[in-house]
Image (cartoon, rainbow, N blue to C red):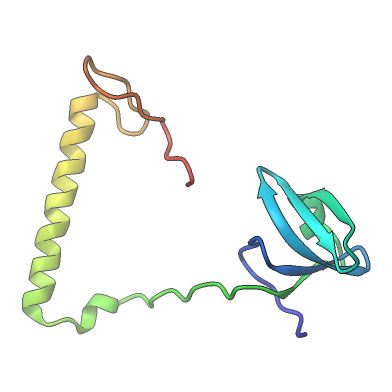
Length: 123
């Protein structure tokens, strides 16, 4: 297997740590549950795992590629005009929402609204 660095650690990935190969079984908060190639399980803090000098992702899902900047430069003029019109509409809706709630980032509840977290949560 070839050693490689990955930007994302996912369940199912194989990592080299503490002199052995381990499979990532689960991620919970700042902890990673590992199972060694001989079946021993351990829980390690992510920061401790990734700071280990021998740490490497040896088999995992490749990170998705990101489209280059200037992607819209190659669009036909009509499609670009439609995209910009949608952008203006989305900005207008977002601005109206901020005026309605009276805040820019941390929402306060208005009577009859549904409680929402101040920051989005990861699914």
